Image 1 (cartoon, helix red, strand yellow):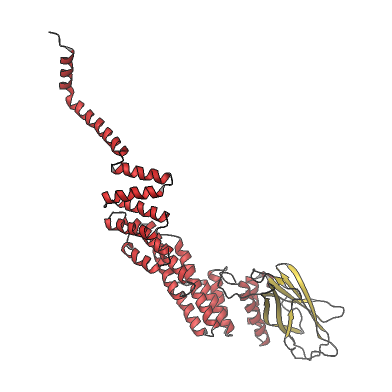
Image 2 (cartoon, one colour):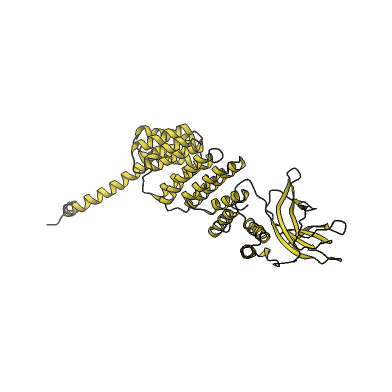
Length: 435
């Protein structure tokens, strides 16, 4: 008996019905998902519609759609976050904060993202106390990126406070550094630099108020937190000002041993040369030569003849820089004296001072120190002599590499002998890595 066409179809279906059912389910699921995605009343459809408004720049319509979604799906973390982002873009911070808080309350595993976003909103408003309270709940999270961003919040707080409450700013930078270290971020070095500079600024302020003892305590606090070249350099400047030369030299040495780029190495070299002259006057020639060798080692420009003249001793008293802020110029100068170290009268002494910026001379001054009418007696010293540049240096606040070369002549016509190369250091009140 031959089967009809329909009978053959029935037999085929009965034989493969399980496979047909599976195929049907697959097709149905695909059609259903497509319909759901395209259907504007489904969750995915509503999201797609909302984002289409965002792409067109119609944010008001996008907000309306997202608000509908949050009413229908109040427990969806991502929708609250997206709505908060849109409110931020539209400069409606309070509504954005509300949505971030709702996202956090949902309890999603990525709620730390909403927590950080909310904290950053308060950072923008300089309301760091609230921002810090918000991030407390995620402080123990084991995620380097999150830890780094927590560090950023404390760092921003430190920068905000650094113009006023420097001690509190230091505390914030220390917290920032702790989080950066946990996150294995190189920014920990940057935070440490801020800490060192703030300690130095506090010490400078105390020195200006004649509170050197407290300034020294602050710098010791800085070094107890972490030893650093800047604190040693600032201590050296304090000890030098107090005429505690041995301590000053020790601190200079420590500073430049740790970091030769901190401070001004010329100041160290100048102190060594000045102390060498004092030692020479006191008859301590061996120690004087040791200081000269140290000075030449750190600064090749100081390499001058050991004994340019056996009759005269040159002693540097001070270096000076007169500033005229209104004209935006400065005038460098030096103060010194000469000693006749013989027992005979010298009746012909001239001094020539050439001022340099870098390797370029810009001013030459010649002064008659002794002559037949006013000779320099044996074993006697001149009064302090001040010589200033007769040409100003422009731009007060720029960095300047200023030098003075001092020559002495005892003959006529003049035969000049180089007595000293003198770095002219401008000390700045604001604390920078280089002065």
